[in-house]
Image (cartoon, rainbow, N blue to C red; front, top):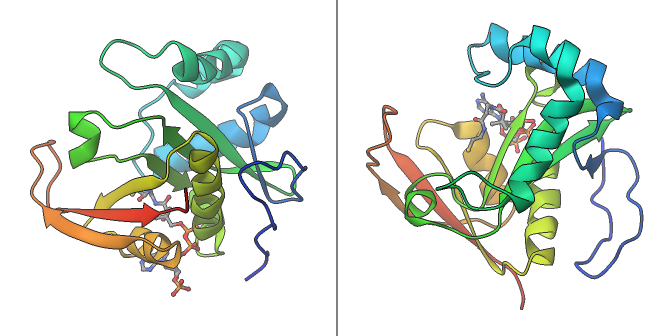
Length: 188
Ligand SMILES: CC(C)(COP(=O)(O)OP(=O)(O)OC[C@H]1O[C@@H](n2cnc3c(N)ncnc32)[C@H](O)[C@@H]1OP(=O)(O)O)[C@@H](O)C(=O)NCCC(=O)NCCS
């Protein structure tokens, strides 16, 4: 592993050393857009087009941040964090403040992705660990994380972070295959 987990508890506001989770910020515009091109190349990106990000990055960041306080109808509040490695955007973790019926089936409290060029270096596992700390700060002590039954990398990440498999279900969400639901119990 290239990193060690910070000795960080839910009450502590001490700064973390690199890599760390940051709130979305225009400071990371260039590396974020580079990462978007990587996601597009693997067919994953469904967000703003790169030319719009180039011209309206401030608005994009504001939109992502507003999901925390003014989510659209039908969405629960969600705080998005960016994993910063050596000053560059490496991935995203989103923490949903509570579950609705849909998230109970698929999505859970925490979703994450690591940009393709930074994968298989332990950052997914680290980012999930840091997102769990953030979820705990929001008062969530039982954390649901779901993943595709075929997503070995995500399963390893969740299990390395203490996830206990509840079940594997067939969710009607337009995606092929089954969904695994894991729970992580944090001390109250
Ligand atoms: C899944 C994902 C987050 C993994 O990120 P990552 O930074 O590569 O994860 P890590 O480096 O921490 O790897 C964790 C473990 O999974 C393994 N792993 C990672 N990707 C893997 C893959 N494609 N196939 C098999 N194993 C994989 C790693 O080798 C590591 O194993 P180890 O703990 O035995 O050493 C990343 O591939 C990704 O963003 N995928 C697309 C989005 C996604 O699937 N998000 C999760 C939705 S639930």
